[in-house]
Length: 288
Image 1 (cartoon, rainbow, N blue to C red):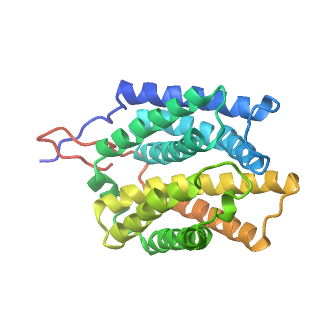
Image 2 (tube, rainbow, N blue to C red):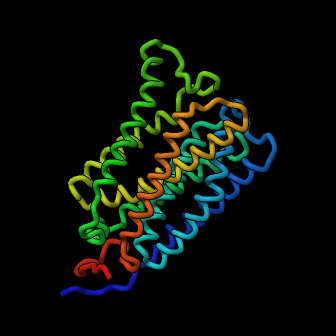
Image 3 (tube, rainbow, N blue to C red):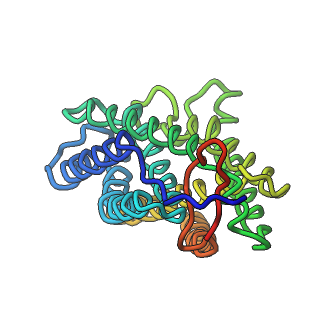
């Protein structure tokens, strides 16, 4: 017999963690954007930091706030977006904690890194992947599979072309040649975490495995938000007089717009009223 359960709210621990994340992200981005000469990084990196801060403040923070409220009300749509934006903030503040020159907000970056890591792992562990799989019914997934495989392939080619020759020659990659960074942090994160995640998600979704739907939702939100942040970085770089190849601008614009269309399609495919977390023992979760 199917037992209907009321929508389960987020545990207080996750609610508090995400609320702290929102507050600290507003502090970090506002200081970075509005306190003159706050960042002590190489001149070439400053436009990227400003672009990231702007996108985080005006897009990621409101999106996380709305998704957190929706997820707390028991919405599976809100839950997926909450996880995805948390993934974006995890990536962002992992890079800030490891990449930016030491400043007065270092402990804030570390706190954001820790909070988002805890929230993302715990949030994914709580979701029932079969509920999300069943919510999609016969919804086609080829577009999501192809997009994730494309992102993984393009990122791999782009970063390997940067670090591969430098590794063989024993020189510094061009991406960090004008900085004091000891290693290319973003390339490390992408090659070690992001690219394998997209590839695994695409493979699981292609076989219509339940976890493939979870990973796809999270990565689409995270990837699209990050793509928009890259476009914001490019705008600041151009304003700063830096040269950004036109093909690179077009590529990131197309990927970001395609990702935005796909994530909208993905979220809309999830029913409005759905239970979000693992059911209690002895009860069967139902999709309304």
